[in-house]
Every structure is written in C-alpha cells, then in structure tokens.
Length: 88
Image (tube, rainbow, N blue to C red; front, side, top):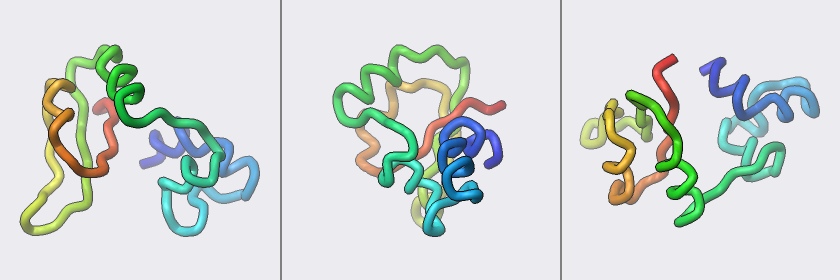
C-alpha cells in the first residue's frame, strides 16, 4: 500500500500530514490532491501503458474476490471500480 501512497498521495501527505484523507485513499483524487483520467480517455491512457503483469484489486467479498490478471484489455467490461498497479 505504501507504493500506492508514494505514487498518488504525496500531495495528501504534504498538505494534511497524513497519507489518507477522510479515511479513504480515493479521496486523493476526489478532493483534487492529485489528478486522474476516467472513461474513454482514461482507458486509452491505461491501454498505452506497458506492463508484463498487473494486479487488479476490487472490494473483496465472498462472491467477488480480488484477482490478478495479465492482460489490460480484459478490464474494459469489468463494470466496477478497480485499482490497477504493477506487482512491484
């Protein structure tokens, strides 16, 4: 998780003194501490990235466990909020 914080929450840490704003990592984006892209533009930028393997993490429940996949193109139909990051 610290790698995620180092990548996306540096501004949160520098402005608030904490890595997490209002108990949610995602608030780094929703409170505009950092910028993000979504929709068609976000997907295009993501598909342009090169990684041999990525981890895809979603809220874990008994019916929807977290999983690892190796091809980014499989994400376009997942229809849920996810975090995507390289293994290291």
